[in-house]
Image (cartoon, rainbow, N blue to C red; front, side):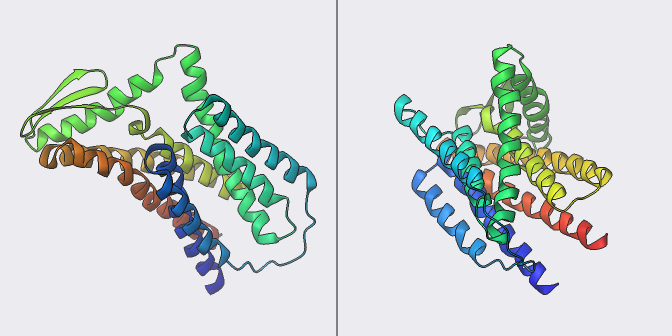
Length: 278
């Protein structure tokens, strides 16, 4: 039991660094992102699994994984585009397939879990961002306005901070000078929801949780992700009001993945508690 708890703690630390790495690479500093990826590998290498029976490797997973990573890199090189969130997830899908191709139990389990997270995130991203955009379904902007901007602006008004809504995703906060802030993209909190859905779905699949428990945890994960994002956006508003837009930009880069790491840790802890009680 102690060994299992130790593995969970190490895995949560790895998830925190791993999440920070993907967000830093897509939105912040590539150097910091690479450093966080390296830091994520340290706790993963310390995890010990009780089940050590030998498992045969899969050449197919290896070939497909390398192919996916190569195509992802080649596309970005040929298009001279920067590495985005979707690119990072596709690359992680390939890396997880490579891990699943080995004959080591620990790497196969880790690879399978990360495969679920990255695959589910990619699928949801393609639906809500790519497909909805192609079909001209204005879901993202409406979600940003009614479920992110409106609640957080209401909180600002409650504590007496002067603010005006000037567009569907834009507000003006009147601090030492008027500051215009746009809510969009990652600010919707959908990225965190996608990742947490992937974590819960992957864990419930690997641990063979029943459907009722899985659905309840999925709903809980979505609710936690939504509330955590409102807290994040509200903190960014306050930072801009008291310290200016430059400071807010710095906080914006790092705050998101830190809050997500905490919420992901909470979800993983609850999942582990559910497992222990069954």
